Length: 608
Image 1 (tube, one colour):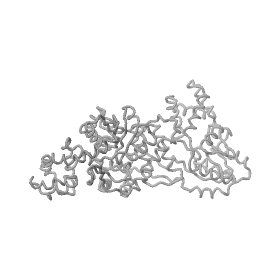
Image 2 (cartoon, rainbow, N blue to C red):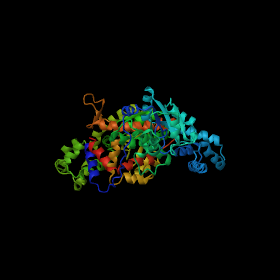
Image 3 (tube, helix red, strand yellow):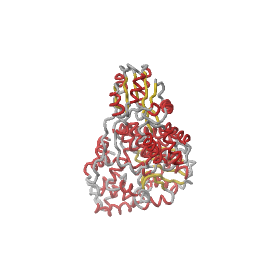
Image 4 (cartoon, rainbow, N blue to C red):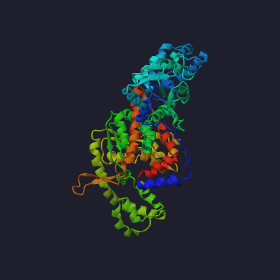
């Protein structure tokens, strides 16, 4: 990993082709500790709260996106646009007076031939589904309740007091002294009249108001004689350009989860947590949901999540998509190359020896053979007219390749130990299975190919091995495997989302792969290959490389896990389980991340 990290940092620092840094700075968000805020509130007789975007968050980034949710849920196409226009007409008709939800649906009843009361109830139902408590303010509210403080809510809203009270109660807020709603008071914050109504109810009392609008929640309350605290709207903290290719509902849900979790003020998060939360979380939930669908449609008996990238993916899958058995399994490209050597000798040479010949830091042929676990060939170099300390350079590749082919049988016998040990490891794992799915991130699916070759061809098991990847490399081979059902791809391949593939697999591919690896790698040493213990020659031995410091990995995984929890247990309280995310959509935030070069440089520099 260390070598890859250095390469990634170098790419990031030196590659002039990287696009200009598009990282959007965050505006200051509310960061006052709860205890500190409570101290500030102690002198006041009445604590007043704005409701939406202060006490209550929506699981959608904009209030009007509730209508998009309704459009999807009730299959009323173009409902969002129609609903927004109806509200605008109702406000124009009222000539500055506060309107109610009934005023809006009376217009829709005429224009769309709907039952207004039925659809009012549908909208209220959806509002309740998408609303949840701001965790920061809920904690403040609970502590104020213990202190015996009198609290009120003041909202500019067309929903009735009863509905808002139900939304608050369902979210954990119960015990308000009064709730003031503009549509019932016929007065709003915007025209200052509602503050006069509140003052008449609490004459002589010291009132402090907390809300997210600098004018109606800060300036105007102060004008009415109150004190006020500005709680910035979480949706205004950070702009996220480049998400336009997401479907409008996916984008809304994604942004809402990020905003309401990261910026509510209850906790502060480091760059690793955010990196996992913002990029890995949506890939994990989208990919795992798709895997469940693929597995069910293709009658898969077991999903094999390959180390190390499958570590956190298996955890997400088991937590939220359980049903088909899963197992976290060891495999590596190094092990796969030895398993498949006798079938794919030329590929072995191209993948192991040829890249070393083109390295800037030259190595000897002997050193190269040691690195690829072919020490046994070094004594045979001299008889082939090759010196051990001779540099491995492109001009000598033909001679080295001929040498490998000349000793192919010897190598095959040596690698058969790896092949047999791999089989002994996997045999009990796949026992009783007719069809297994090998799950990896990308980009060739070598481990799946090797396991298919080993189990189906070499060992003649009555089993079918398929593979699943987030993204596949360019070329005809992956598309052939996709055509015959050996390979399933979620995000991109040559025959799907080809523009995403070109973006990922271009000249900065090492940099992109490294960032993806950092997102999903396991907090454990890299697996090298299978073998047998020298003492017994019968027990399978697992060989590893050195490990990195797992702290950064664990923080990234924590971010992925927390996003997944938000997606499944906060998102609509499980009422919209059919919500699906396309592979194209989940990769958009990650591909945007590449352009945030300052952040990526920090991640790469300190991830060691």
